[in-house]
Image (cartoon, rainbow, N blue to C red; front, side):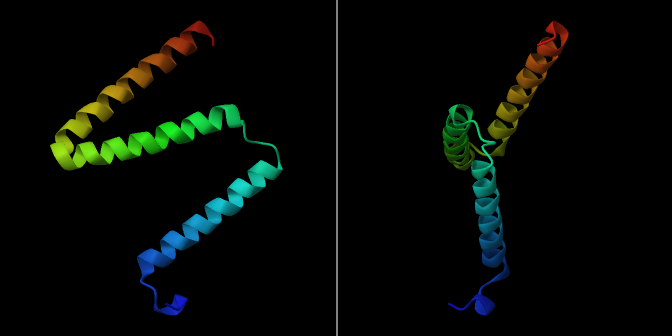
Amino acid sequence: MPAWKMPRKEMDAITVALGTAMAVTNYIKGGCIDFTAAIPCMVCSVAGGFLGSRMAIKTGKKLIRLVLALVSILLFVKIAVDLLRGV
């Protein structure tokens, strides 16, 4: 299918994917990526997206909102404790 006949959403997705690929390439060339942290983050992000989408389909948005609120509160507490400790 020629690009000029593609729906707008698909063109936007392709544009974002290409832009992200170029940015990642530049960061890798510049040595700015710590792969020991990036790979576990990537794996957990993919797993969270997969599990979250399955959970949303099975249980609805109420449980997702509760889990998101709980994780946000825990993250806020961790950051506050780290700031108070001077970490």
